[in-house]
Image 1 (spheres, rainbow, N blue to C red):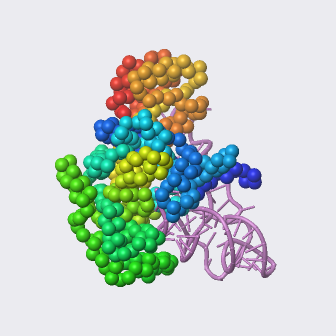
Image 2 (cartoon, protein in one colour):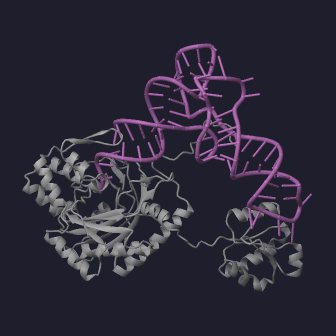
Image 3 (cartoon, rainbow, N blue to C red):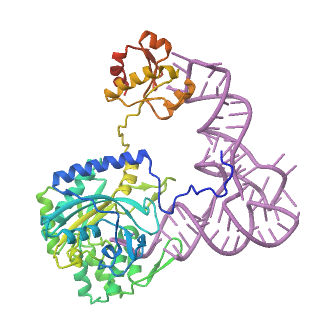
Length: 444
RNA sequence: GCAGCAGUAGCUCAGUUGGUUAGAGCACUAGUUUGUGGAACUAGGGGUCGGUGGUUCGAAUCCACCCUGCUGUACCA
């Protein structure tokens, strides 16, 4: 099969990149078609921006100075740095800033696009993946924030999830902001680290997070993570505040009221959700799946959220003088596909071709004639690509999961009655060409 | 990045205290059936045992470093 390995190109993929096969892509297409349907219903415009942007458009202008250029794929082109986009929000901010005068205000757009991140891949997390974004730009109305949650929930349910299988968690940055002010935690770095620690409550639980807020924590593998060094009194106050079951911040009270008007209840106020982004200014939400996700060895893995978002009122402003408050949501589609494929048996209809077997090249005209008739009737059909013996042709048809095979040899051609073999039952029938379409439709 | 575990055929794995030409199942190829797939039987191809260096008469097996994968953790715009 393979002999000389020297100087052969590598068949391996770069770290964090994967081939995606039909089974997965069909589920993805199914999700995408649901997304588009809902987006049209909600009145969002479809937008596409390029994969590459100037690095400073998506990097340096971010207010998140904590990570300047790390984690993105970049290269230099004629003295300018270009980067592959790492999300769809930064390019949107750039787009708004560039086209501000022409676009309607507020501007509602959705986008589907591949994004790239130069970081360590994890279960269901790759360095190249498809993201879905929907954003409202140019409005401070909390109706927008609320509607995004309702909308994403509608998408998930269209995809086959029921209310017990997912939850939208919602909170506001204003809660933690106020909390830290009251506690006199003003050091930006300390605040940021504290937020990051709090973001892990879901995964690690309160005890571990309290360790992180205090002196630090050792994980299961024995690795030690440095703590934030808050006093135990402050940690108690934080825990008490973030365990509250109902919000006391005005923006959330309003949003919850809107939820009620929408008759939307599959959410949960959870002051412990943080979302890593430094650019969020108000509402934050997260989409979580409530069932176990397993890897290919059957182990339950820490899957985390499949997406989230929130209000970022200052991002567009970074590009110039336009004041464009915004709110948006992002979903990692490949992660959703990964989870969904385990949860539901997706019976996605993809009709495999009926195979017309080749007995003799001289009869090609007859085979093609049949093929045209069937294809015109909308039946996926192919003439066996090659001239192998019938056995090979049958094996091929079986392998590609073809529903049926048509045998149209010399005898059949003479009598004008091809033989139709049903590949799941193994039964054969000799039928008139005009009956062929109906018979095949019965099988498919 | 840090930590733990792992890497033997396309896949899943076995390989005893270092010892001849490294094995199995599935998959693949050919045949039993030159007009019949999914079952069975027969035969066959395919491995520098993740890589490099070292210890040794001898390494898949021991040591070092590196690479890759998994899991946790960190970061995640």
